[in-house]
Structure formats: structure tokens, C-alpha cells
Length: 283
Length: 292
Image (cartoon, each protein chain N blue to C red):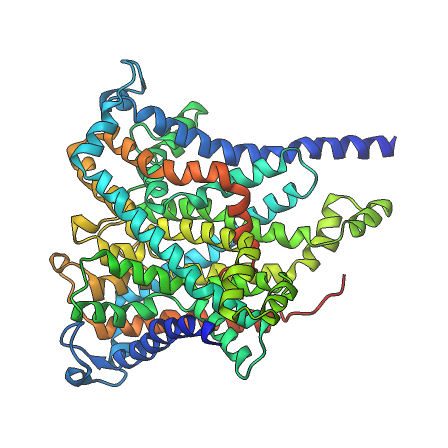
């Protein structure tokens, strides 16, 4: 009798444990589902709680896109996310290779330097860098964000890839070097292709972080409409639309910002999840 | 060795030098942010002392303390709960894991707009409709964007956005624990709670420490959500980084006097808090290499 009670107890717990999961996920699904429907409705329908009662209003998207330079913001976001993602790997992958495969004086110090660099708050660095950019007349150009996003993501990427290179056997590269291949060539032709799963994981992770970055974009890309990123653009759309009372357009703007990373996540969620915990944890 | 060059250069130019420069700036009064160091006026600790005596700085510190403590307990408890549920052999584990992490991949601007313009909206908001539907009129009347509740609304939405990340870290820790430990515990008649308390919890102490450190860093750096919830500086939601932003980069029309020296002092304080978090957590939960 006692044993049976214990088994039913376990079965009840077995069902109960789904409840927090369902509530948590359902909340997000309902909220974004509602915003999706609202983005196709009119503002009047949103306030009277009759979403979509006059059919689908795709023009919300057209108007947001047309009157707010969203296409422009999109290109800016792609440029100042894509270019750093490539540059980071060009800088970090060779360094990670050296740190994981070579022995030299000061290796541990260098590696620890990158680890400390990961947890230095960017507010501690941004003031002198801003000052340089002002003097070099770069403020108001996308290149400021490209430089910052590249530099600030190098330490974590070095850290992540150092751990990854340790799992890549170096016998093939060594054999190639004995056959007269230069070390640089062996690195780019053999080691880096072999490390590509790790490089892809960390790049997806960097991509998501940079795409959604807010603090530096606010400082360097908000004053000038030409270089606003998508998040900054959305923020301005929201501010203006809460004044004009165009909630339908506002939610269309939210969807435009939400969809790119959401679609990426649908296809790459396993890789993205691996990027978070793969090389230890980001500081 | 030359392969290390670019990364090292980047590190020295973009980390080491600005770090030293910010520390120096914090002891000076700067005519403007871009003025040369020859024009800086040495003021000793004045930037720090005037911060410590300003009431807005006290509000900022009080706010991040509340975020750290209350938000931290909520986030870590929820994240641990989800991680334990997901490792207890639920169906569609990968789906749940991806779905709970999803909010972390959404731009904070879009996510905070979802909360501010829909969930907390006082006309058609989700919370209002839900609580009216189940008869909680008191809850339905709360205007989450009013000054009284703004901070709590911000904290709830921030915690919701963070849980997925901490859940992933706990998950990776729990998955490293060998299954046979649980199997022998089940044979000995240990229930789910006993298994958690006597196996899972002691063995993920290191992960727990990582999570507390990461949470501390993110509370000290708290900015984006504060800026989204109150576009203009507000004592209810101000944080040290918000204050720094306003002092160094703030728009002239907000009436704040731009003061890069004082901003640099705030940056140094933020960095010291992060450093302290690392040191304290290393001391409290001293890493014991457990063999398993």
C-alpha cells in the first residue's frame, strides 16, 4: 500500500513538472502571438480588443518600412554585425591556435589577460575610446561600431577557441610542416578548417550578441539617422509612434526586429545553445 | 608566434590602454570629453567624494542592490528549477530548452517593448486582461508603468529575459554529473527532492558560483532595461551605468552637466564592484575539486 502511494506520488510529480515549463513558454508564445496579430490589425481594433476584425492590414509593415528607413537600418545592422564577425575570427583564431598548441614564456599570462579582458565592463573602456573617435572625426561613421564590436569580442572568442583547438589533433599540421609547408599556411589550410565546428559555433554566438547590442549602438549610432542599427531604429520608431498613437505600426516594428534573430534561432538553436556553454561560460 | 600579434595588439590598444586612461581620467576634471590630457585639471579624489555624497548615486546603488538580491534569487531559483526539471527525463527536452532560452536571443529593445506596450499596457495589456478574467481586480488595477511600480515591472521583465541563460549554465553542470549516482540513490530509495539536495546541489556548487558571479556582473552593468523603461533619468530606475551614460554622453537638453571625469570615476567603481564579485565568490565558495 505504501509503495503504491509512493509510485502514484511520483507519477503526479511527473505530470506536475510540465506545468512550470508550459506556463513559461506559453506566456512568451501568447505575448508574441498577440503582437503578431496586432501588427496586422488597426490601432482601433487593438484598443477595442477585436484583433483582425477588419481583415489583414499588411500596410502597417509597408508604412513602417517606408517612412522609417528600416531598409537602411537593416543594412547598417548587417554591416556592423557581419564585418566584425569575420574580423574577430581572423584575429582570434590564430591567437587561439598559438595559445593552445605552443609553449612560450608568458603564455599563461597572455591567456589570463584575455580571461580578465572578458570581464572588464565596457563602460570602463568606452570613454577614452570615444575620445579617440571624436579626435579622429570618426563619430557618425559605422566604422566606430565595427572597431568596437570586433575588439570587444576578441577575448571571449580567443578563450572559446583555445579550448576548442585543444581537442583538434595537430599531427596532420605537423606532418604538413615537415613536408615543407609554412606554419601560417598549415594553420589556415589545415588547423582552422579542422576547427570549423567551433568557429561556426562561436561566430553564431558573436553574431547574436552583436546584432542585439544596445549600449555602444546607443552611444555611437543613435545621433545620426544614417548609421542607426535596427534596434536603435526600432527605439526611435517606438518613441514616435507612442506620440502619434499608431500602435499597429509599433507592433509591426517590433516584429521586424524580432523576426531575423527568431528565424535564425529556429534553424540554429542547437548551435546557439552550444555557443553559450561550449567554451565554459562568457564573463 | 606572429599569429598572436593582432589579438595582442587589439588587447593592448582596446583594453589595457583605455583601462589605464579611464583610471587617470577619474582623478581629473576635464573641460570636455575630447580634451587632451595636458588640459586636464588634477582634482584628486573629488570626483569620487562628490559621487558618494550625491543622492542620485545612492539611488543608483540602492537600485542595483535590489536588482542583484531580489532579481538574483528569483532568476537563480527559476533557472535551477527548469534545469532540474529538464534533466529529470521530460519529453521533448530539446524543445523546452530552446523555447526557454528563446527570449535571450531577442533584441532587448523588442523584448522590453513587448512588456511595456503589451504585457503591462493599462488598456489592452495581457496582465490586465488575465487578472480581470480570473477576478483579481486588485492586480488588474496596477499600472505597471506608473512611477510606483516601474521598478518592479522592469525587474520582472528583466528576470524573465535572463532565466533561459542561467538555465543553460545549470543544465551543462547537471549533465556532467554521472547518471549512476542517481541510479544508486534511487535503489537506496531516495526521492526526487533528496536526490536534488544530496547529489545535484553539492555537485553543481562550482556552477552555482559561476552563476552568482555572472549575475553580479550583469546587475552591476545594468543599463539597457533601465534606459528602455525610463528614457529620461529617473531615480526609481537609475543605475550606475545609466548615470555614467548621462554624465558622459547625455544629451544637452536633459539638463545634466556633462562631466567625463565623474563618469570615469563611475566606470572605475563599476569595474571594482565586478572585481570584488569575483574575489568574494572565489573566497566564499572555494573551489573544491570533486572527483566524480
